[in-house]
Length: 337
Image (cartoon, rainbow, N blue to C red; front, side, top):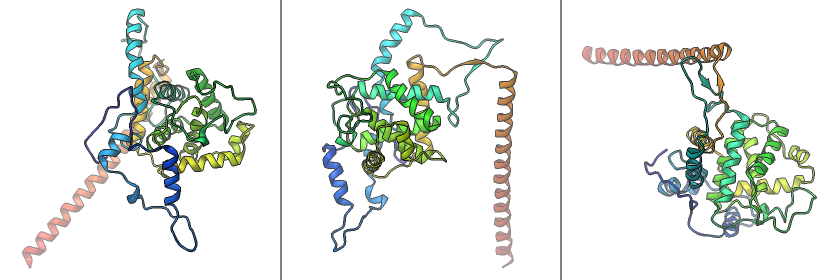
């Protein structure tokens, strides 16, 4: 991942790039995509021209680098300390393995548990809203200007923080209707934090639904083999138009600087940080006793991994022998000559 520098973000502050208003950054980006010629044509910078120095990237963009701390986990630490004190007083019980019973969960980094993952991702979004620094936003994400339903938006919509249950129901409805995967939920959170750091925005009561929707829309297209079309989301959210969805997606991509790549190391970091968030907030992944059927399944997976490892080792050994033989032949030829 390049640099060895890492940065832990404090709960009271979000990572910051050089201060510019979000609207100015978007206008500047849109202006830079045109070249001054008789015929104005779209122009996309080479990726090397858009890269930021490694030190700044590591400090500001945890969605790009595995060594930078995730923002949501840092924001949750204040509440976690209070909950740990409460849990110590109330002596909350946990399941522990014993000689006769072993408890395990079925969630892995490659196949996370869908319900638990969505709970953790929405809890991360909840902490983003609760611990926000200010109200920086853009009109395209404002629910008052671009409502998701025909129901009137309350006058205090921008002042009341949504509860975790409300965020969970909103995301769960979209994932169930679109049949999205747990991996897509993790990528959604990556894109959300990338948007907040790249565009210097805050997710707040006025914009959280449209920002989350935009992140889900993009993640489903990038991650899932059978992507959900924008018109499909209009069938789920009956009152939103395809034109509005297209416009929001375009702005989302521009603010991400068209960087939709999610390295495997970043994905793994978000997965394990979400598990840490779940453990800190007593949202542990469901534990079930290890029975014969699950033991056989684990054994089969283990044998499969062992076979793959043996194949890789044998292939590496064959390449090593080939290299040794080549070196030996070259030395023999050198002696003979």
